[in-house]
Length: 177
Length: 438
Picture 1 (spheres, each protein chain N blue to C red):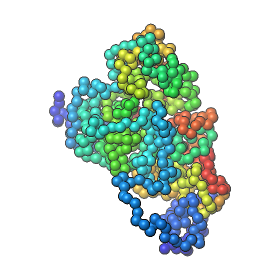
Picture 2 (tube, each protein chain N blue to C red; picture 1 turned 90 degrees about the vertical axis):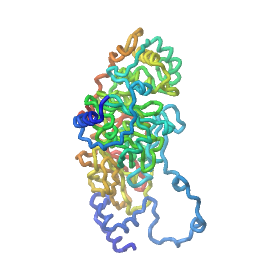
Picture 3 (cartoon, rainbow over the protein chains, first blue to last red; picture 1 turned 120 degrees about the vertical axis):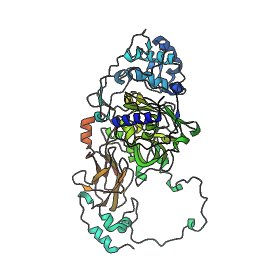
Picture 4 (cartoon, helix red, strand yellow; picture 1 turned 45 degrees about the horizontal axis):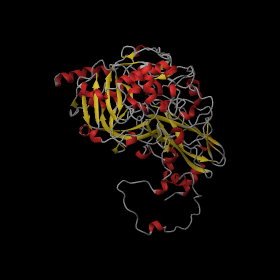
């Protein structure tokens, strides 16, 4: 714990570094919360693997999950249906190119993150972490970004090399830390 | 009383630019008269008025006052256009009918909406905002708590990064300004500066980003530099004086004035301070427009300076030669609009438009130019400048830098994002208005 005065000093230092913002004094009505109490909402997975939960999955396990919970919209083997295809994609050439996972997405962690937070469409956040790892492994394997028997977990997933990793230009470097 | 001599003076006014553009100050010098002579796009000849009748609606008591007012039944066409009216499992868009509105702010029911998985039905009593991550003390706020905080109000436009995307088409799509530019709107927002809440949580010096997340079924999330969060970001609770509507983020949204609409996370429930961006789906994939060499822009935060003419525009027919007001909106994520120039001859000559005061940073500025249409062909276009010296690029400059499609896409498609070039309307001899590239 820290005292109110220490907190104020801390803020003054941090804000002095970050920006010359004028902060109004608030009435301090926020309720303290512990990280464990935020667990159900704490969904972000960063490219370096920060936020990845325990667990693991393989493409074979993911194929079963996919057939049950994903293929109705995304088609058999990720070929697309009423929702986007999850495989394929020609090399990105210009704005007429279709963005797919293997030809465009810069980070493998985005696939885990979005699947866990948003899918399946009609029942988001009902997959277990094991199922998310498995279906992530399945989709990466369909795209030949990992081997058929590779296990995806918090160690291995961030190391998957995405082909278009260096395909981006920061639009406003002066505004991007 | 109208001054007949003033009207004659107006008719003798020498245009300041080709095809009949008049001096913007003609409004102020001749105000009431010019207004009377320029009442819109379906005016009957002002001479020889019919004898005035006392209509039936004036000879009976009127209807009931409504608990929540609705527009006149004669205004039903003034509505958003919907891309997915049956709510199929994909994004829904509702576009603002700029050609049927005037002024500078957008009524809440007509503010554009993009909902990637529908509008959640949030009970505000059960909604929470959590701020955590690289802070000294993670905190959770209820809506009731935030209501007790010092608030600020400001005008702000919010614009989808994909607004105006139809103008990347290699051929001009014949569509209304609503279809082309309906994914931008402007409103007054009231809420709590995010900096006030971050002062309470404390900010770890390692923090460089915030990752904001919604309470929708996608838990949509976007990464925002901490500098923006501490500059003018707001936890917005009210829009145009009333609680934000469900489509725009009820009961609270992140407002990032002038920045890409998708980053203004709706139904905001969580802010995590991080050292690096999360590279979620919408920043890693969707809002990363591809360039002509196959690379793609990333972190295209700003909505850059833009303007478009709303009156006249495609779908509005001009009935007869005479006086009209050309008007439209200009805005910039960099600050205030400093100047808008308008042409009626496809860019050969230009007249400076009048800017409606107050001109506010990162908000719509209405511009107006009086125009004496001689009934012949004309090509109208506006170009805006902001106080930072940024100018709206030409379409040729955009195409050279960003590319265009190979064939015309559907008008609802998003071949790329962040088009801020001009829009040109060709007025034809009969008064029809077409979309052209000029």
